[in-house]
Image (tube, rainbow over the protein chains, first blue to last red):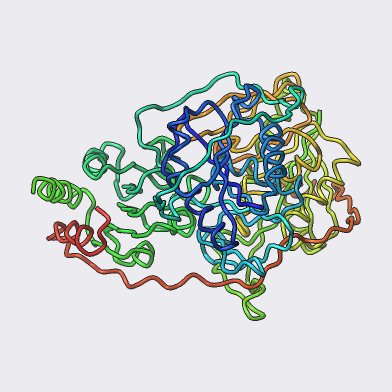
Length: 323
Length: 249
């Protein structure tokens, strides 16, 4: 019996999300009186694998099969299910990201395991096993009981702080019995943006809406983001108008983000926008309309014209940085 | 070549969400029910493909798991342009049940491409599409933001962290689609609404399936603390608050 956590890597490296997952799994393992085993798929060095131990994994299993080079949902599901069964895992933890969403539900069917998807907290109780998750696009939460012997949890990004612990973990390289005929997905081309902070990874996000008035006015917003080490984002009308790229659209139908700080500039705060950003720890709103709904979701606000306020914020951050 | 689009019936996204029965049921008073936004985009893309003779797509069917009261939403899908519809007469409480019922439908009537929205705007589980694929032992591709079909061969664009991948996959497959798959949802025209009245909704009886999860209760979001306003003449104070009070910069 153990808690199995799938730690995804990015070109052979783990990132904060991987450590959040392992720390979360270690804590769930502690709650259930067992230990966490981390599973890595792909070419990851031992030095990198060891890092998972620093966040509480007692055992690290590494699969390096070429058949798992690209994400094929069936092959990945077969591999993770096989490891879960060999390890007698009763709880499996994955990220609630593109990768996790493409595997966790398949594992659920294969192992007849109830899934608590998109949870942002530790289980509320172990017996019965109750998880807490967002529903109605952030307009409510649900307490859901998982009734199967094996349980699957997918964790929201940036919802659990990684905890470093002194720990010696063993690393085991394993093989799994995947049939090559199972791999039915062929990757023909990859287009990656490099060197840019990913919106979903950012701890601070500066986002602009229609109140920015023109695509030409983004200069100070981008400057503020750069100074804060933040990613830039936008509301749906802005991406629909082509003022900013679609990858920046945050909201219900765009990217769902949960940074520590979300600065909404010239965004009125329609329900659909808030659905994508309401899990942010702090929301700051800058809007010329004092009755804009964004102020109901924000902890800090300024009523005023973005074009006047942004340059002043840029200067203020520069002053703070100079100190 | 036939496409099946799985649709969910959800409260309009602007609904003020309230609960009844000790917070165990959605208060449906005054709620407008609509096609789940991502499913609507999936349907739009399926119809765009069917409109292009070079695609080889000959028919678009929608499937829904729900009681008779969800038929207006199915009719809307037919009015937008789906050729016919299948409704499994079952009121599910969770995704595993929905996927089980959909899998039965497809085992009895095969499709080449099955489209599901990435999530439903009510339960936000992101699970039905991949569960369905596993039940069918078919490949699935998630986070799909582009789908092209030429002479029956599909090319898929999927989002990965910080980029996109172009992939091909063996048919039949399940594509779980998100933003980008179609620009704007197609709107029903009067002609479509008239035609929808005579299109067939095939009602099938469900198979028995126990849920794996159980809802204990809903909880309305906690009211946020009141917004602290900073004078527009002194934005510097905001940076000080973020640094010293919130400690986030």
